[in-house]
Length: 309
Ligand SMILES: NC(=O)c1ccc[n+]([C@@H]2O[C@H](COP(=O)([O-])OP(=O)(O)OC[C@H]3O[C@@H](n4cnc5c(N)ncnc54)[C@H](O)[C@@H]3O)[C@@H](O)[C@H]2O)c1
Image (spheres, rainbow, N blue to C red):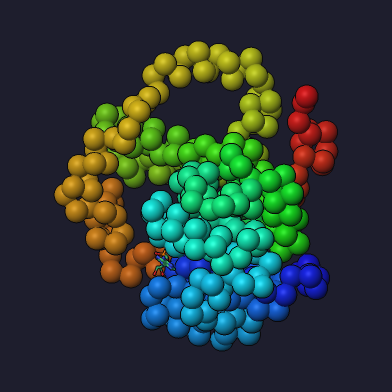
């Protein structure tokens, strides 16, 4: 674990749900105190109990002002709703003009979230992945107005926490990881919708082919590895046939309309037994743990891991 940062005594987290409490647990590694705030008093008390029981220095804040004043850094992890996030950022901004304000939005534009702040230069995206204590990457997203120093400080802070921050230099929907993930999901759903195979086959193929190697070899290193001439030939033949719908699939919309929401309603692409979601979550966390840490994170390793100009 990295040494504590003496200059970062207090940090704040707004939203104590799934992501907020997980992020708070990681931030607590380097903080004298994490102030946590949630509009739902029951959720807040539960999160504070949960984190305190692990010996983490966390305190329930009574207001956004209490979260931000005197803090070095505040991370927002409330519901994925632009108007809500805008109002939280406006209030945080009014309460303290200097603190770096980070949003954990999955897909909303960082620039829009900062729209009602007087100082959007100190608003930055930090897109953590679930579970935040396990998944190494945090995408550090530059809004249109984010200051260079805020980008650099955020990368340094996350590195000191033992995370793997990556810089996303443009505020595009889905940043990097979710663009890649949902390009795959769009095609996965299209394969089922077009009757090419069933959902079980899609998941079996992914888990037993590309899924087996992606943690070790990313798509671009793989393209180099097999040869860019072969990659070009494959793209010539396959890309014209891939799904290019500009919006969500009709099959996905139909499932949602029918109340088939997946594990939470016990029917989605698959049927879910009671308790199965928890079993699957535990298996996934155990699997992720077995894969950490990967051999090299960055672009400074062996020649085959350095990027060509
Ligand atoms: N769940 C994931 O896998 C995941 C991954 C990456 C990013 N995110 C993003 O993180 C954010 C939080 O997601 P989550 O899954 O933790 O949601 P969640 O529903 O578990 O928690 C959100 C919490 O925010 C609280 N809240 C709502 N409005 C608030 C306000 N105005 N002030 C303070 N608290 C408020 C709610 O009471 C709730 O406890 C979202 O933006 C989401 O898109 C989620």
